Amino acid sequence: MSEDMKKKISIVTGATGGLGREFVRRLLNEDIDEIWAVARNVDKLKKLKEDYGDKIIIVVTDLSQDKSLDLLEEMLQNSNPIVKYLINNAGGGRMGSSDEFSREEIESHVMVHCTTIATLCNLCIPYMQKGCHIINMASQSAFQPVPYINLYAASKAFVRSYSRALNVELNCRGIVTTVACPGWIKTELLEDKRNGKQIQFPAIALAEDVAAKILKDAKRGKDMSVYGIYVKWMHLLSKIFPHKLVMRTWVKQIKEYI
Image (cartoon, rainbow, N blue to C red; front, side, top):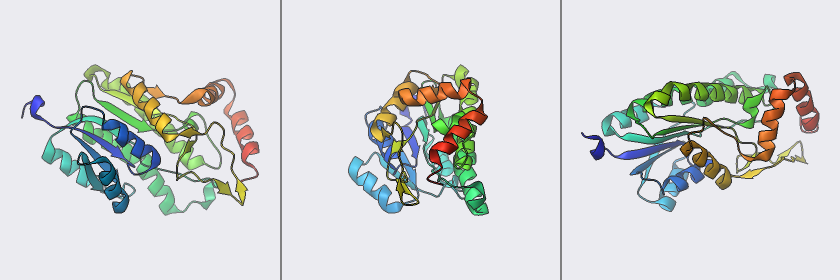
């Protein structure tokens, strides 16, 4: 099949969350034939398709499980599409001491944030060409070690390092890899209270604004997207000050919540 005959698709994991839905909504305006929306919750995926139409292809799979990408691999082989966008958005985390996390939770966390991202990139790259994009979601937490969201921050540091190196590797093929490092985003997944106390999030952003900035930066060919003055300032401070000092300051800020 000639390149002109192939259908153009985008893949969005974590597609039913606040940020994932925003990516899906904005990709509808791109020159794309299908958006493969990947998530665990069937009802939410059906609602997504109901809201956004027939371009949405529902892919139900739990990315925390082994062999979770078998379905996507089979779909790619059968369709042989051009993957215009791969957006690795699935994941989440919680605040807590490292010894509170069960073995299953640790394995699931690393699987979704690290193994799945790297594997899905490798599955999609053969179906990409010049002008295609990979967007991997990291976080402001990727800039330095972060106690009490240790597992989350460490996995996001992997995503940041992996994505920036992958961008260099794919540069000769015209494929852009952008790692997104936003701060706090107002979504239904964000815990707003802990120990009975309202959590104060500095410079909290709206999902629609963050998604717009990430896609804009990806189109500009940036290897890293940092949203907002506050997060850019935190990025700078993480370079200037010793990480031990940054960590101590963070722990003082959150001591009433832990």
